[in-house]
Image (cartoon, rainbow, N blue to C red; front, side):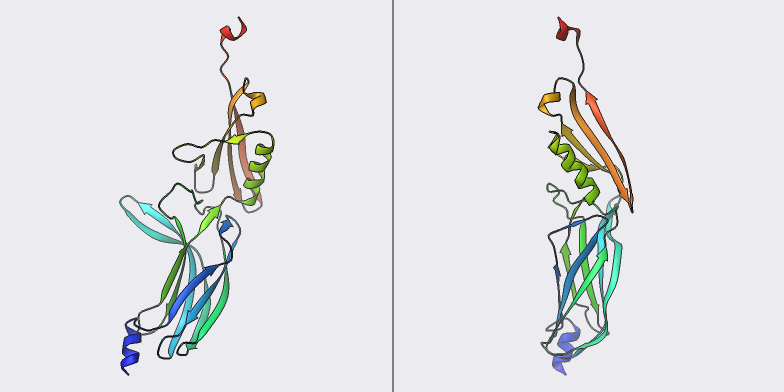
Length: 212
């Protein structure tokens, strides 16, 4: 009886952990992983286990985690003392999911899991998720690099979001074109099968002294 009381307040109760199948995931793709449930000192009934992908949403001075997608992984199961149960899961990654930037201290995207247990503290787990642009955008990036364009780096990031889904990247011009253009700006967004955007080439200013 005492063990049941301890489990109900979260001491020696079921333990929940998460593991992702990859270090990086693309927007518009599928996030895959594994959830592990380990029993505590007493048998407990799990009503359901929910896994969700969430982003940090800020409004003024307040912030909260906004759900992007979620799935029920397990429903109405009994976990025996020290028993281990594992279950794979997958979640869609929306195209407006924030991209991970290496120089941002704040983690903007998390995968969260919670096991609902009646009359007890619910076991929880979470992991930061690294999000990269859609594969279509990465293909364009590779093409520009092969033409000699080099992505610029600054104090903020050369990769910025101009809206929830638009990605902006800035490149230095190839050496062979330095006398004609200074840089290129690529802005692209992907929605389902549709890719839209533009590439702007910034011309170098011409001075009369260049021809004297």
